Length: 90
Image 1 (cartoon, rainbow, N blue to C red):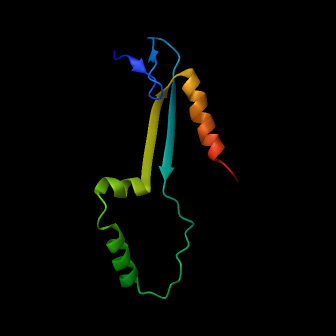
Image 2 (cartoon, rainbow, N blue to C red; image 1 turned 30 degrees about the vertical axis):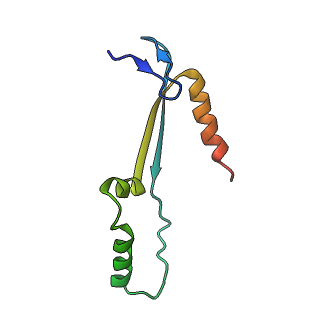
């Protein structure tokens, strides 16, 4: 079996040792409301295609869904959690 290491600090996790998996998903959201701009559907589609034409397939996928998963030691688990929680303002 491959040696596990914390992906934040690099500390080796001994076989049978305690470690954590920090996972977060970033998913595109929608409130279901489409703005009434007065533009035709064709115009809106043309504009959207123009905005994304320079992006790679990977960049487009990450605009819709991204999963981040890290192996963490005890100390870095707390740092991971605290950094996410300190982002919350409302």
